[in-house]
Length: 338
Image (cartoon, rainbow, N blue to C red; front, side, top):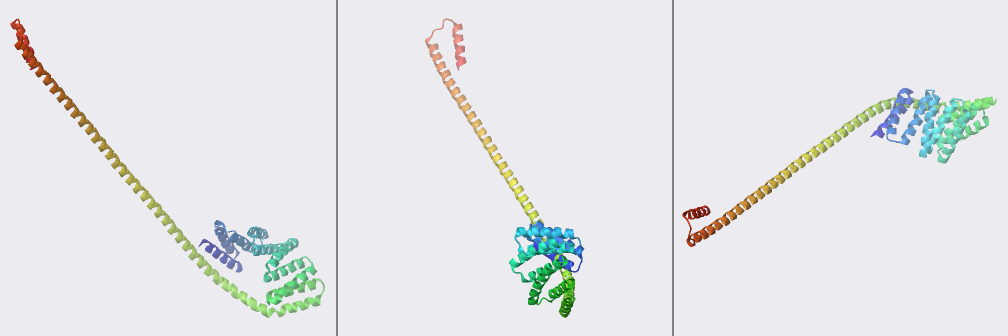
């Protein structure tokens, strides 16, 4: 969804660029770039660097345009994107031409030409040849200018690309004029004029495209608003689900803790009860043992006393006391034993 939103911002930026609303175009390019950057989408970032460079070129801020085209070129080279490389080189050449740096423009256009020849991109080659012709004409290298414009015109004729052919006839007229061949310059201007009807249709088509661009701009803005709303809704739902999951987890954790506490409390109560019962059993056993020992002692002493009494009684009958006092003392002893 985020990538789709980034592409929508990019499409809207293009539409604003077509209608020359450069501030809005740049705002939307920046929004698209931010999303691509967050997603670490190198191809998306390369595309935005290249296309947003055109905004600065239109605004005649050539240094920033070069910086953006160069950044796009670096990304495209890392990605081995031949098409992106060729466009970035071509755009750099265009800015260098505007600055009058024809040597740098030539260098970049020749590099772009080599890439496009490898790709066999006929349409792009026709434009590349025309751009080289313009560069050589501006640098007063008329022989090379004519060589490249003728090559471009040959491809444009096969493709029936009237607008490029008209541009090429204009270049040929300028070459002829600057080399002093005014008759040839006049003929090329006539050829250029002969394509006016076709170009008029193209211009009408462009006007229709501009109107369509304005309509599409409004539609894209609406689409972006809807996409942003959907993203916000998705984010809200996601946050709510995460919050619910956290609450459910917290509830489960606290419930488990309460369950553990109850189990531990029950276990401790059972242990205490067992300890109490064990202590009670020990005490009861000790008491029973004391009672047994006491009973045994009592029974043993009783038997001993009975035996002693019997022995004393036998002794009394078998003995003659010497005095009444001795007999009384003996009787007291018997009484104590009884």
